[in-house]
Image (cartoon, rainbow, N blue to C red):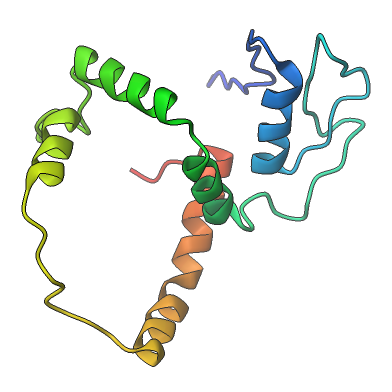
Length: 144
């Protein structure tokens, strides 16, 4: 007999539940739980609405979020990663060392450039996979 578990909820304690809930609304498309207020905020499919596919526009929403991370938070996360020795996996050097090498290195002009038509063709070729990866990120699927 195979036991299957499904995550039903995550509880986060934070100073501004409404702001955190707003972030997750933008990221997932889930509406607020009917009992959400200034002290408690939740997202749910029950009693809420969901866009047709939360993967739609995921990369744009993530880019927008990343652009709005305050400099002090970005620096805090960088320091935490350095202290913990964060790395992609055991075959990569620690992330902070790779980032430092890129930041301190000399910039070189692009060796390959493409025109707008080639860019559009590449975007079209990758569109299906971009959507599939976004769905996998949203659903937590892993193809190993």
